[in-house]
Image (tube, rainbow, N blue to C red; front, top):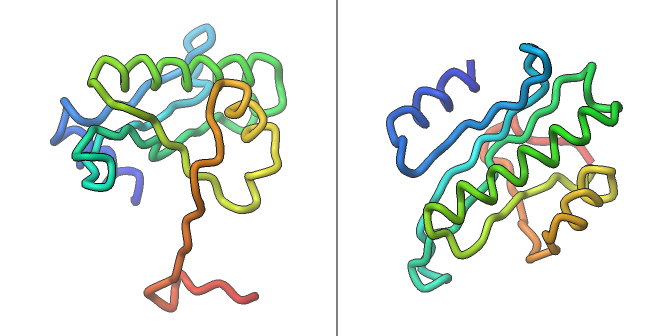
Length: 129
């Protein structure tokens, strides 16, 4: 349901959002969702954000899945450049910071660019320590 809402919102802003798919022999391997936003802290420059990066479970640990992930990231970078974005950001959870994904992103030119502090605002989002 949450993905349906996101897709509907993205379709309403085609110049500032994109969904890119990776397929292998007609089978969906994964997708990436990227959006553009202006930030005052960046001098009102366009910043691209990877909102969602997904590789299907059966492809995650395969070489082809890794290649698809890299191709999706490269495609998002290309799209972001075509929209005159000055940078592209991918936010990772704390659990994902020391994984193959973070290492692949670092090899692709990403760097740690800050820390996000998060506070749940609803009881549903509250995590126990």
